[in-house]
Image (tube, rainbow, N blue to C red):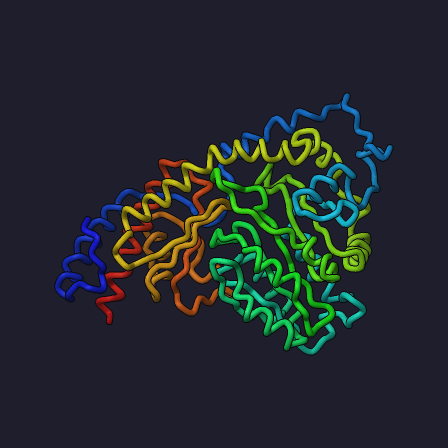
Length: 428
């Protein structure tokens, strides 16, 4: 295929091209595909990597924690000390400020917002009793973050993402001038879906924020802190240390989990915060449970051991994932490069590739893929309220399908992007 920009074509050329692309698309529909790239799920081969973890405990195993507590029983609300220490290393936060829960960091984030709504932070009235509450949402971003704030009726304000992270000029202005702005969602390393990592300057500017609201908090979701895909992985500056150096220790709340390290449905999640904030949250959680699943934590510690063990395990994940990401990027370049119909990110890690198709075409591309048997994340999902004003961004999740299925799905995706662009230009 010649790399000629579609926008330079005449109407007759576009009509001929559309007819050719439509024939190719019809052939795809006849294949009866049933492929799913809607969510960033680990593939079966990735899950298999953690199967030995199920064998580390038995009826004859020592189930007594280093504290002397019986892990089969109630208690140890903040989790095993070894697990606190491991998550402290992964998040860059002192272990005594870490609380380890069960499998879902999303659950912990939801409960954190719930606590703010009902009981509040920093001696302020609960968010639920304040007249107006707003949250900043970097876009494109994570739909489930946006879903939490929408569920609680919190107004969401979109903030554009740059190659260095959220547009900090906008963040600083809104946070410092508007006391109804109570938080911001952040995925600082290999952000969902763009795959970018916040620059050192961005992290320092976050740590230096001077919020108009005393109860403003940065929700720092480090979901992909060890999910590298290259020999030159991104490096993220330690926000906790930067905040502490500025006397802003209470400014951020940190989240992480082993969901894409071991088993998403049976991993371990954790949170951390400054002394005042974690005290409030620990009291909130104390009314929900008398202790987390410590047997699962024992399994994880025995299997992963320490940060070095985690990195060795993630290297095995990389062997599976790197070819998939390479295939996606190769096909985007081969099929769409030079046509002026799409641009995309080149992440060094994480779980997604963010693709911006021609404005006004994202919904059509997703529809075309669906009607030919490939399910993608819904167009608009990466924006608050599902509203992408440009109708351009699509999150591509390469992790779940085998490489052979992924190649077929990407062939259809690229064909759909070209066909949708042709249709759009002919409309004009």
